Image 1 (cartoon, rainbow, N blue to C red):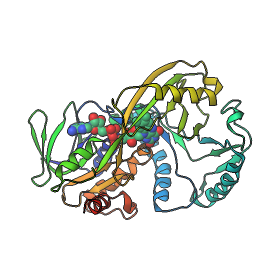
Image 2 (image 1 turned 180 degrees about the horizontal axis):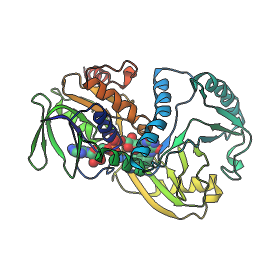
Image 3 (image 1 turned 135 degrees about the vertical axis):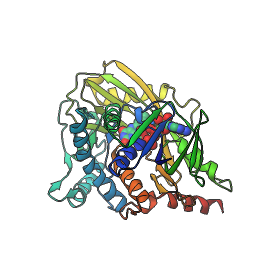
Image 4 (image 1 turned 90 degrees about the horizontal axis):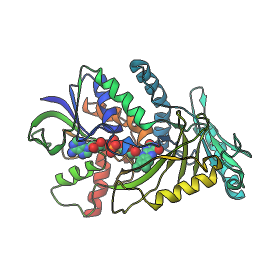
Length: 382
Ligand SMILES: Cc1cc2nc3c(=O)[nH]c(=O)nc-3n(C[C@H](O)[C@H](O)[C@H](O)COP(=O)(O)OP(=O)(O)OC[C@H]3O[C@@H](n4cnc5c(N)ncnc54)[C@H](O)[C@@H]3O)c2cc1C
């Protein structure tokens, strides 16, 4: 019998294990393949805030998470001696049309009000010129560009290595790779693994990325007309380029250019709701690379060192799906981070672990709660 079973060794599952360790819960984390085999083992690692306008609880929650992650990473780095490749390098958003500048100037004022915490202020500066020649090139910015000082980036794989290394030091957490959960009985409180072994648990967190939805759907007594979530494919690539690693991320109409520490620049991402092969790369990635090279001429001849694809978990309500299942007291969801998991996972994991310990997280936005997703779903089946 273990206090807690965590299914999935992605960013969500690993953070859940870190928080469980802090709470002293005897924990088993099972990953069917290897840590980072799912969407989390990608290449981009952009930590992007929401827009500073029309402020609400959801934006505040993400803002606080983007600040607290800095200290979380610093502590884990000190503990393990590893680096997550984190840097608050900011983000540039070229404004291709002059009228967009007027809107951006309004957001500059919004950021002054909403992007502050205690003595820290972050900015949505509207500027005329790029911080470095060709980053991005001026054709792309007829209305100038925004420099957002809140955004950051992290190297996804080094981040997972960091979390795993910290967990390997834990007396409470045991990680089993190559072990798939085949079935979960949330009433009896046991999971059956693919090799037939059965494990009893006090609580189980489903952090299995897109697979979480399949497990949740299977538990529904009446079949749902809409599944609990879906997979959205994304493709990305890595270029080798002599680019200053301190340069901000460029974001332009779905295109990300993310300079990392080690002479590598990640380019992402496609967003595909239908696809034949979940893990293949095709012309959609070639098109994205062509756009990136047009916006940043410095990348024109940079060789591609990796092409990658993964499936983002998108819950039915679009927001993350977090917390206790409405019908099963032992079962918890931790998924649906969709495009922003890396900046939120630590905070969402803390929320689930405190709920398991009997303390509701009052700050968690209602639309994130697992129960809210289910009431929305069941509303649409009736
Ligand atoms: C191209 C692309 C670019 C992206 N860029 C960014 C970005 O810049 N910033 C950002 O924040 N997010 C980004 N994302 C989204 C982010 O990668 C995902 O939201 C996040 O990785 C999801 O993490 P997860 O832990 O929920 O799922 P996963 O990382 O998919 O982890 C789930 C794990 O569960 C395991 N598993 C599944 N079923 C079982 C089972 N039955 N038993 C045991 N284990 C099981 C899987 O093998 C997998 O390792 C991007 C995604 C893609 C595809």
